[in-house]
View 1 (cartoon, each protein chain N blue to C red):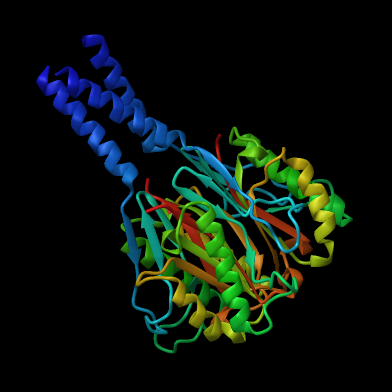
View 2 (cartoon, rainbow over the protein chains, first blue to last red):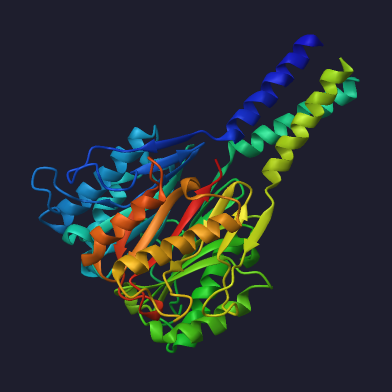
Length: 146
Length: 146
Length: 146
């Protein structure tokens, strides 16, 4: 009986601890420096809120030369952010792609789908007016740890 | 006493199960085919993350002929997605409308408000550069089951 | 023993109550009137979903005269919304800035960073086609109460 009660106490304590939801700010090294006023992501409990990722080439600090190269750079950036938060691409539940050149939609999708296994997050693909650094893509989203 | 303990065990188990947050990918039939790399929505526990909805006429695969017709098509698409997840429009908490023609703001609002009862979700209404399929509206959002 | 059991019952009840997640719609007075079909924010449990804030001058109902003035107006609007929900700027976890003039990026950042202490939310900064009322900035986001 006492053992059962103790188990219950621990179970409830764990549940409460989980709902208290610790907060972690993720700030990765950036090609453009780390002085800008944003975190790459904020994790609260099991949920990760990502900021906008763009596909800058770390060497040139410019967007990838081709749409395909840039799509890969931006998705690698998303992956690094998730990794730093202890998550994977398959934890993503919602994605927004802002794109300054909708004619590259198929190219982007070709790269994008290689980053997931079977099931995809919900996604909006929106034509932006223009993006910082002349980027073609900016990708943000929300992930929930499986 | 034993009965009380059992009740407690069940209560805690239920709470833990709820926080374990089952994941459901919602993929509806689409006018443009189902091969594109996204789900229409992902439900995790009580929260539904929607992708971007556009107002394509299922017959013509083109956006609704008038702003009003397209607004209705896009909102019906949102409604179908919520319905497939076992939710209703009143569960929506946050909406983003991307719009390629801000001059249709009042028309959109006229249709939009008919989809809610009394209280509205938070909403951003943003001028997009352009949208896929020449759409006027793309609507995404988050819902939390009441 | 009975005391321990009662404590357990209360603990579980509290946990369940928290997960039941009360919903609060926040609607503030607006320069443009309160008849538009959206809430400024919706709070569900500890999470606040904000709608789009723009930097209208309450007197003129026009966006702030300079980028700096408008940036301040829009951030004050975000702050008022959080305040009405019993939260602060430091509770923000994810921000989207839609901007119709990317050349004002540095000016916006200068104002933006004064609204936070040490750690920043994740953020996307996206070039919009255009914004309602001729605004330069529209800011939306998600906050989670610390």
